[in-house]
Image (cartoon, rainbow, N blue to C red; front, top):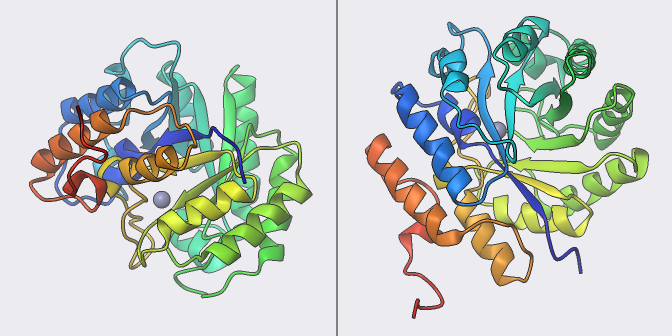
Length: 302
Ligand code: ZN
């Protein structure tokens, strides 16, 4: 079943850190990005251009961009919520791809972006258009695709309709995010298949939080259903400041272990990721949620 190769996007510098109370030094964020690249990552969500009052951890977005290594083989992604954020990101000259967010319910869209769900779709389309006008690419993630922290169940038809509307703007991919980690593999399988059928010309990326332990199962189900790109965060850090109860992303090293052992190539080096987990744990001064980095290597290194 499934492909023998998938693409991964490293989201630790943005999603991984944004919910951390302790402000991380810009230099450490750059070091994290460099470690991801050294481990083989070629698409990295490096920061978000949002109101620093709302997300203090991302207040150094421009400084992070200034410190990015010169790599024309790496796609640096900046997350933006509106035209103002897009303008900031493009002004750095270092962001290759804008990541927009549309949210499936009005309540969460209000909390996240101060607008309705439909308003978030319009904003995302505008961001994609701005990226294209600047000669860059744009992609979009549909937040709370598998459940909403305020409204509970989310109708799959709603997410599919959003994907169809967003596709009109020509994003390079559409992401389906389980922002609060409530999804299950059967649901993931069904929704990925429905979105694939509705917009077959646009690749599907998935973004899972492991709040309730279903993250890896959801990754596997998504790939089997046709998703080609997986978001993950070194160490399994992550969360959303506007979604009560959101915990960490699936950890990059756990996803890589599972997929590589199952014969699906990721292009990433597991031992470099485990080292990055341990390094990041020292910076954060705690053991990170990812599980593979706590276990002995398998199979044993010669
Ligand atoms: Zn997330």
